[in-house]
Image (cartoon, rainbow, N blue to C red; front, side, top):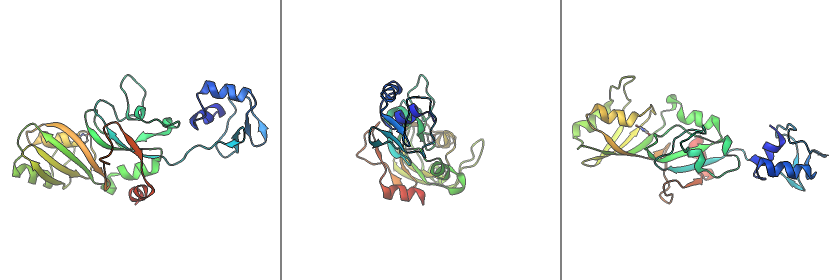
Length: 229
Ligand code: URA
């Protein structure tokens, strides 16, 4: 990585700020003053700004309460992404663990840990995801048992799930897969329509009810341990 990018990612200012800091001879790699912003580093060097060692953070784990209207993507474009909500100098290294639809709200993990994300999303690990679905029409007891037994969708039949009717048009549904529009498609098969969808749990961690939509916090060490297990 270029040294100016490294310093900027570590929170030492914009690329422009960092270039001017470097010009003043304030940055060293090893014992050498480096003024060339294009100088390549791999992070194993001792990089200092004045006397302060500059290190990039590794292992960033965030719980976001996703609001409506943002997409679960890392690509910059006309639509705001979940990463745009995160104020972190290394936000370019971050990505969401899986996807929630643009109009779905609730628990989304954001991390720089590709290995953990892969494990959490791997179908083989059958990680529980729990949603609260608000429906257009009433839900019957037979709907509940079909949701639990498995719904034959076009591309696959859903694995057994846990469905709890909270009220006539509200269901708490725990599924282990994470296919495209899965919850919406499951209710669509039953002739119903999801009008509001919120994820409240993922991998036995619940959405922190202190987080309002669009707010986020770091996961604690013990929460990270739960995810890694
Ligand atoms: N199922 C859906 O239909 N949408 C989501 O965002 C998540 C699960």
